[in-house]
Image (cartoon, rainbow, N blue to C red; front, side):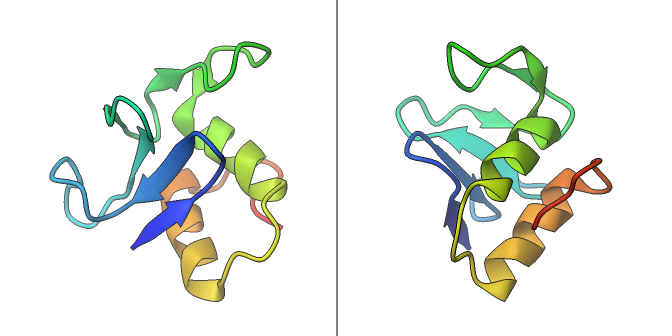
Length: 85
């Protein structure tokens, strides 16, 4: 499954870097995979932070995600404060 989590980022469990079904975060341009604990800076105005926190932030502002896509986001972020709406 592929979740367009923002205009520049996707979350997927279909990339070769996915291990045992663990989704990865990919930038749409460079396609470098990031796991939940990898430190990323998704946008210039954002701090460096674990990818799970960045995905949680993007998911909270992404309306209309299906139940299945929200489940994939939850699998990636685990128990992040604020979670997914």
